Image (cartoon, rainbow, N blue to C red):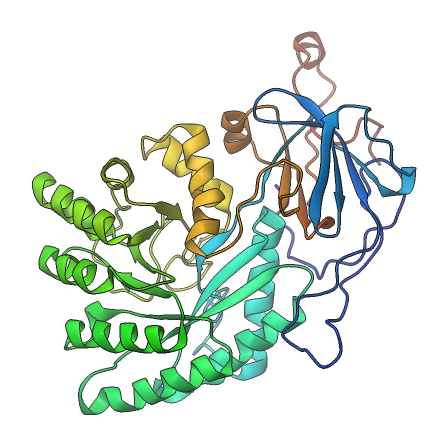
Length: 438
């Protein structure tokens, strides 16, 4: 996988093997700044892609959706609007349900981290593009508000969202620190302002408030008032607090998500099972962070939530990346496929289940439409060089990312061996170009 710094994607030139048309991001319709970018008028053919059921197919995209799926060679398309996916596995694109764009990419800086609006916007944009390059075509970013920075970080992330329209879908979660008592009054007022500004999800960390129950009451009341989903940070190590959260959150629509819930793994098995049953009965979703913690919580032990236990109880579990090279995880990658790999290698999930945690389950947790490689579904897709999900999670190098029906990011890995008789004799696998290198 490329280690180069992300660059602003430019329209890919039309024509040639593996090229995906040449339209850049389009402006939203005049007079409606919140409208999504207009969809490209042209169709795009994904030729010779392998599906998880073993079929090799052509997939035609248009208007931001999948128009048709047919056997290879059955869907003609102009050569300039064709992407050759021979050797690639085509999957529903991942989504990132738990990012921190305002603090991302700060671990290597010298001195205090700047929260000037332009700096936060730059970090949030760069982080979203990194995650897009990995395959995530939608990102939910938790943004701290209050303290000395006020609403500046939220303003910056919302500006990043607007600048990224047409490349990736970025949504913001307003994360206040305190909501109860005298100190919490300002936080509650600022949370209301953040929602008015454009934060579409209400978050926070009840664990860090002197009155966790009062914090949760304030969040749920505001969410019900504005019809917003709730996405809270909690360690989950207090079974009584988990039970109260489940009891209070059960009736809220469009729903409540909590994470990373690593503390559930430290509870006695019978207590953890009871907590999982309570969350399942309330319809509360969990987002785990297999790649490491995030800085929003005090670090209490880097253990991932007990995914198999939660799933067995009926809890819908998604996986996120958490910290992306910030204080929470200085080496965080923001790669959904790495999160899936860790769930498969260490979390006891089958490869398909692990991938679903970063795709279908993540999209569901974010309130996004379901994606399947079938006609009529959104054209949010990821092509990865490989032929099976297990192999893709192991060696996910070359990737082609499709958002709203067009190629928006591409990572091309080249693996070459020196002139060695054994490499030739064993026909060792290669990736990338077949012509001689420079």
